[in-house]
Length: 73
Image (cartoon, rainbow, N blue to C red; front, side, top):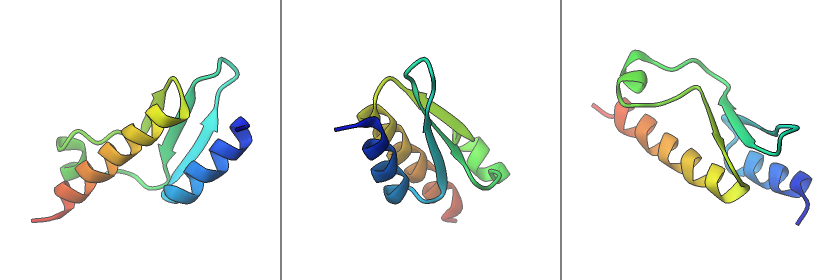
């Protein structure tokens, strides 16, 4: 599968993030909105990176879970 297709699939799966692949071949994602203080305290990051698309998906799922837990009282 082409990296363009991976980008499109991940972007559809995680619409709150901007997804891209660097010239060096790393996969990146950055949030569209700033983190709350609770999300920062829960270990959320504004930008993450991975070696490959599946690694990025794993990190995105983890980040989404952390954000949800931080937002639930």
